[in-house]
Image (cartoon, rainbow, N blue to C red; front, top):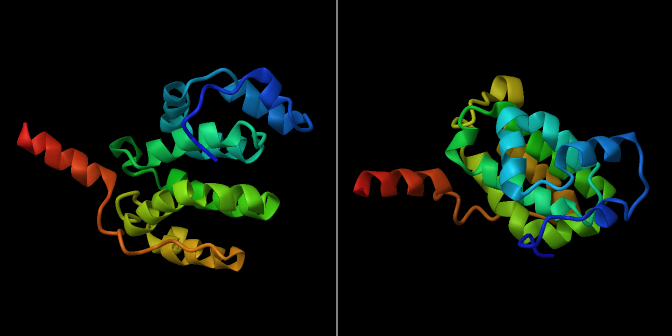
Length: 166
């Protein structure tokens, strides 16, 4: 399943049953580019992640990519609710649509790894949010795991190094 595609059209939004939750997701994301969706996640990631939970499968990968790009950016610094919400989103989506999450796992797992390794960066203390690493590891019931081999490198470290070179 590819994340690099065009903006979902209305017929893709209507490809599954329509209810108040899908209507809300469509109201917020329908017709929006990834950049516009990222702006929504910057405003309130947890709120818009709830919309992603109800987004039809035909549209989900496109807007999921916007959410993951936001979470791997410096704009997500201190967004504990957004990081925790992403783990919850993926866990719940996996319960409802396991095949979809398995298909997207190669794209999802680097973001989960990033969240687990950078829990402090998100300002998510374990006392209030629990261990992100443990929460992500609990997804193993689906046969999914996050590879820790690359856990030391993450996007904003690279961005900061590039800024220092300029």
